[in-house]
Image 1 (tube, helix red, strand yellow):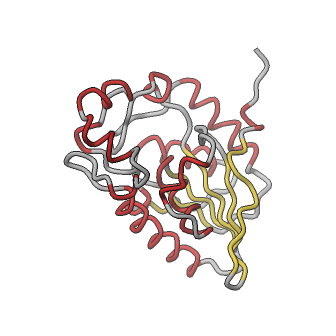
Image 2 (image 1 turned 90 degrees about the horizontal axis):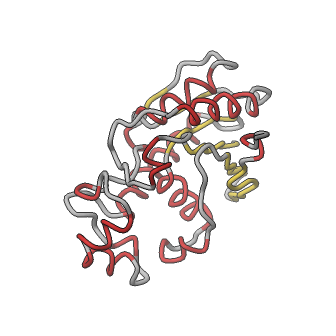
Length: 205
């Protein structure tokens, strides 16, 4: 089974470097252009299913991709971004200043155990996302599915698939909006065959 993990395209909050968690944020103009480019990059894939987080930025990205496939997009709550609770809408600098104890726990080497204020921990988000991914792989053995979701979901799923502890999450380079990542599930072996591919987003200026 081939799993194509796509991070949603750009929003204003991405551009402003603000945390967005479960907020219903739509794509901005650049994000909509990137979604069209992403759709073109994936148009030749023989896709049997498209899944998406129910959050607006992911659904918009999935709808753009689906233009060339005409499938029923299946929304899965397990694919929602990390619930960051009170951190929603803050910049990184504001979060560090206002929630210093949380930030200290997050950067102490065990980010998976740090629970977001009135939100969830990364370990909790990883487990619900992984449960959803396992169900998708069961439904689509020997097939290809596209999953449109979020930064922490994708990185934590890749960590789980490769047997990497969340404490090593920082060893992955930043995952860009609109990026394509591919996991191949063959027998008991899972291979990461593509990571953070954004070549399709390169535009002349």
